[in-house]
Structure formats: structure tokens, C-alpha cells
Length: 52
Image (cartoon, rainbow, N blue to C red; front, side):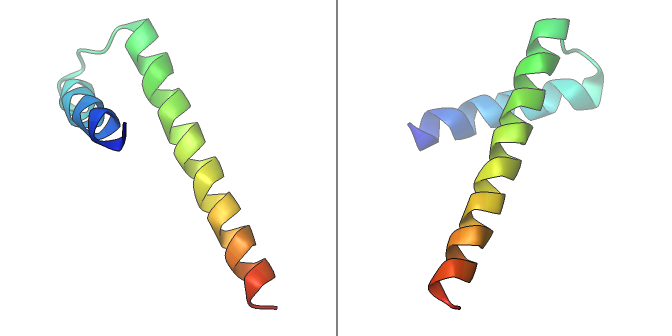
């Protein structure tokens, strides 16, 4: 699953640089960035709870 996400991410990261994303693709990319941010926050919180 992670490999599929990475492949999709790599393909998707080329298009924004060229300005070729559709509205749907941009929304999907934004969603992935939001999920990544939430996962980072969850990991930080878990680390803090384990080490306090």
C-alpha cells in the first residue's frame, strides 16, 4: 500500500511543477498533504505521551 502511495505521489509531484493538475487532482493532493500533517501530529503526540 505504501509503495502505491509513493508511486502516486511521485507522479503527482511532477504535474504541479508544470502546472498541469486538474481541480480534482489538486484536491486529492491537498487531501494527501492534510493526512500527512495529521499523521505527523499523531506521531509527535504519541512520542510525547511515551516519554513523559
